[in-house]
Amino acid sequence: MAEEYDLVIIGGGTGGYVAAIRASQLGIKTAIVEKGKIGGTCLHRGCIPSKALLRSAEVFATAKNAEEFGVEISEAVLNFTKVQQRKQAIVDQLHKGVQHLMKQGKIDVFDGFGRILGPSIFSPMPGTVSVEMTDGTENEMLIPKNVIVATGSRPRSLPGLEIDGKHILSSDETLELEELPKSIIIVGGGVIGIEWASMLNDFGVEVTVLEYADRIIPTEDSDVSKEMEKLLKKKGISIVTSAKVDPESASTGDKVSISAEVKGETVTYTAEKILVSVGRSANTEGIGLENTDIQVENGFIKVNNKLQTKESHIYAIGDVIGGLQLAHVASHEGIHAVEHIANMDIDPIDYSLVSKCIYSSPEAASVGLTEQQAKDEGYNVKVGKFPFKAIGKALVFGKSDGFVKIIADKASNDILGVHMIGPHVTDMISEAGLAKVLDATPWEVGQTIHPHPTLSEAIGEAALAVDGKAIHS
Ligand code: FAD
Image 1 (cartoon, rainbow, N blue to C red):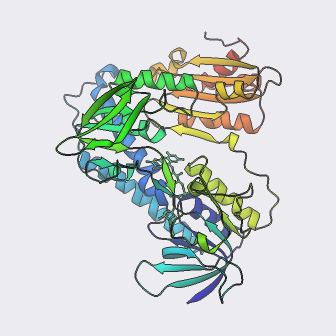
Image 2: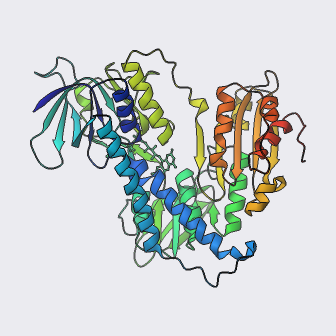
Image 3: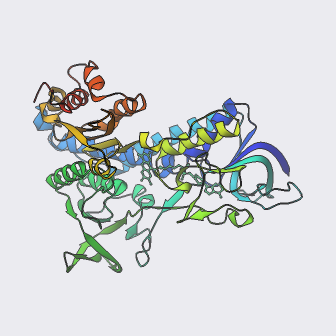
């Protein structure tokens, strides 16, 4: 069967399904092609299930330390089967919600693998999408005016350290574990690796993190990296930085071991499992790019600032274009691409305004430039930093490690970057994001009356600290 559409979206992850909803709002006749489950990585293998597990881990860790709050629990016992059931129930509920949104928006969902065809009897331009249906029925042929490629990404493995799903895992398999290992080596101390390290440690697993760079979460401000390393080590996580893992040294058996060169010496690490967390590769294979002029650069689809590929009627969004591989970036790009298709007058996305979060315990969050990046860009910076230990609500929570750090430009007084590590900072970073969007100065943020007692007082105080005017320091 062949059917005409204004827009066909290949991939129903966060980027794709949000684009479809926006298109439906704008009256654009839309189909979405999804080979797995609508909701994609974020809903089924990423953000949501990992945060559900992190929450259970946090509750378990809090229960073990309940005495600190004057609560006596004879023994906190972890039922990991129930932890996984709770996670799945949350995912299933949200999955139903997204399916409902597709129906509500009258978006046609095709369950199958989408592939872009070259010029054909259906269209003189590349872009017809052939769908190999999951149920084995005859291929569907979708003839769109525009296409959005939103095929996302998958865990990257290291040559020689291939994921076997048993001893050597990616985040996909780790999320589905039926039993927790006693010990694990995490190769990669980036955002996902650190979330896993924190969670598994809170569940009682012995964790070793091997990070190639000289600090964990190396894209964050170095003060945040240092504090994160200090606090994770305090929890009992073993962190080895400047560790050049030799992927081919991995050996499996009852236990797995792997060697790394650390400060000129070869060190062998042994655990029950290895989690490889070294980034994600774009899903560009088999989707028919060879039938188009679409360019792929460093493994990612190349787009202009309107998110158009070399074929101007074919857009690409989300993880498949690289950059910040985050759900909220993918969805924002989806909306952006659709609004461009609808000829709306929109500015290119300003990626410097994107907030980034790490949901470990402690949490970390940031927006804008790190102090080093600001200096490298030639800014003469002034910095305000305020610790959570001087914030009443943090003490009440029993989580008073960490700080808020604001970097501003001495010349213009612009806020260049905001970096936080500590309790609930992932829920607080949006204030900093809004301040940047509105071009607020640190003084204006400092003049905002932050309610007391709240954790957000740390933002107000850090803003005042930029000009040496913090009250409680
Ligand atoms: P995806 O969500 O990967 O969706 C792509 C979809 O396309 C998939 O459903 C796939 O099945 C489908 N597809 C692929 N090829 C085809 C084809 N040819 N035909 C049909 N369908 C196809 N981000 C955050 O912002 N916050 C977090 O807390 C967070 N936590 C994460 C935790 C983990 C463990 C992981 C792995 C990722 C996390 N992310 C997080 C990243 C986030 O999941 C991704 O950035 C986001 O899912 C990208 O959305 P997307 O739409 O580009 O791709």
